[in-house]
Length: 419
Image (cartoon, rainbow, N blue to C red; front, side):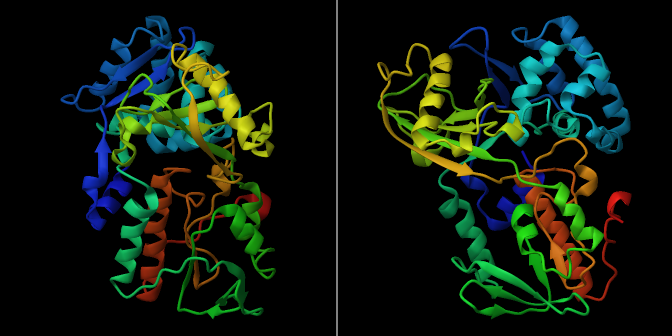
């Protein structure tokens, strides 16, 4: 339940395209193949009482002693809020837990799964700020952990309405028009235009980049590169992730919602034949899974990005055999794979490894007619859909202020290393 995403759906008039699920966090049981457990959030209890109920009533994953030793270190977060959360960015999840004498089993049972779901990276490499940001929302917002699925494919059901919203108001949306070069005045550094791959030059009063940080770094004009604001981007890079889609010839154990797989290779998954109207089927399941971590930098022993689709699917089936032992066998002797699709994203959200927050740039830049958007820019929701939408709103505020002659929010100070 992302508030800025919800506002976007409301503004587009497509709130009815969200299929809301039971408010629960469901985990596969590592030691009991084929079994699952829930943290259930009662609908009539407000935050933080609904989260307290969810934790206290689940007796399958943590003992009472472990719950107590987990709760006490979170008190500073409740008292210090966002300032405390941001200050933990220098610590990995593992180091933060050791510092606060938290049981290792909490990491194994909860934080590994949460880290892989939030940033596609193992907890020993993940900034604790990411986990605390999520937990802070769960504690303070009644619907902070509630999930919904879009009722169909994103191009038609979400991107289409977004494009029409722009064109209906006189804007233009162009695809297959890749950017080749940012044109600048060599003296002032101001943007003079955008040269597209086809040779066309597009000009405007103000320019906003919503490119991922890796693409932006490749296209930075030479005249900008020595500037500390842009030089700090060297500290940021996207994390790889793989999405796997598998269609089976029969129905698997049905569950209408997201599941934390708690597998070494898989992050979260959902049976889209249950969760999504467009893929609904009473006869056969279609699983959509997040395969992570999938590179050595993210914590995997294998560079899965470099593997073939067939190798990735076979490894996925091996993990699914543990989740569905009565229905799936890696050798194909049970449920048969009808077809599959593997989508590799070598650079997705920025890698939230310890110490990255201080290098994330503001939306306002030292270039007076150039503004940044993207989840890697500085905003409290980190690398996520919500972070991307919020960064766009903050970028729009900068542009609106500048075009109206008002003073925009200042450019974020660069750390001493790059000044």
